[in-house]
Image 1 (cartoon, rainbow, N blue to C red):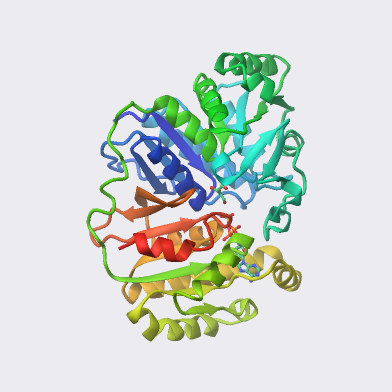
Image 2 (image 1 turned 135 degrees about the vertical axis):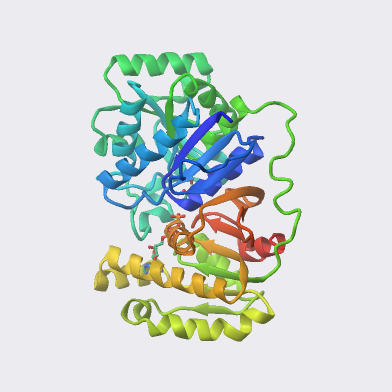
Length: 421
Ligand SMILES: Nc1ncnc2c1ncn2[C@@H]1O[C@H](COP(=O)(O)OP(=O)(O)OP(=O)(O)O)[C@@H](O)[C@H]1O
Ligand SMILES: O=C(O)[C@@H](O)C(=O)CO
């Protein structure tokens, strides 16, 4: 079947966030892990979100992967492809948002692309090109302490220009308020001025509906789930059946576990709250890096406990502890070693019968899902804004929840496990 919408996401939790939004808006959506085989049977779907792990890799690799994903989606008939980035615009001056968008835009033969990370449901809004996280500008939010890409500038026109080949313009709120035609005219004017990308202001879902309608006149756009919502509302057929309804119809059973590698403030609070619900093991990150025995000890700890109920294992630590560890081992080395350890733990837990798995953190989820060799998910109901239940299509199905670091309320882990039966 011909896709109404193709999406290339730069991490796995971001992909499920977008898949959740598209599903809620009425599009039948599949999330794939990596670029699918040519013969992947899709069934009746409207949208495919190809999840890459390209947010924090060298820009040239991110470009190559994203172009290949885009080519796969175009082959399946997608006339519009959205590049899904983080709603907090996670990136560095080297990329990867600018280089990937430049490449996708060139492949699509477009002069300019609309960009907005606004996602009102999770408090992300853009005004005069400045990104706000709740009530504070990006550089005053907890994202200033992100372990891999600390965000220290809220002016996205400036941020994107630093990582793009060409200049970047602004579609301001006054234009957005005038409607989709005004936005399309502004995009054309910016293209005439030689701008390759335009940051669009958006505060409410209605703004994103306007931007979604305007973006569909082009072959490529870039944003977070808010833009996904705008595109999906423009594309969905009114009155179509709830696409998430049958994902939880058959319980999968099996054991349940949670793994956390995210060090975001939200995840730290969720782990603290989970202590009241299940046994929690806090890993020593120094030992995880130094020594494979730490993983074996964690497995021994989980052994008997997971047979009688869910457990949570976390490497997560405070910003100060993260900085100290990174100073001793380097940002990448520390990050990869911990991701690898959690992925290894996930595989060992699955080998012991875990079939319901909650993972916190985008990079962490990427490492876990890759290590488990999972290829595609159907998208089920929402646990918290931006986090759906996912179901593998395999003969012995698993349920997963891949949580972006900043998402979910304090009760997230308990809530997820309650839904994942
Ligand atoms: N105690 C720790 N010290 C230093 N780094 C850590 C520690 N625990 C985890 N990490 C690393 O921090 C990074 C966290 O990134 P991850 O993407 O998983 O979470 P996040 O950034 O909060 O989530 P998202 O990308 O969805 O917003 C990973 O590379 C992880 O391995
Ligand atoms: O857009 C978001 O905030 C999330 O989907 C995400 O990508 C966080 O890593």
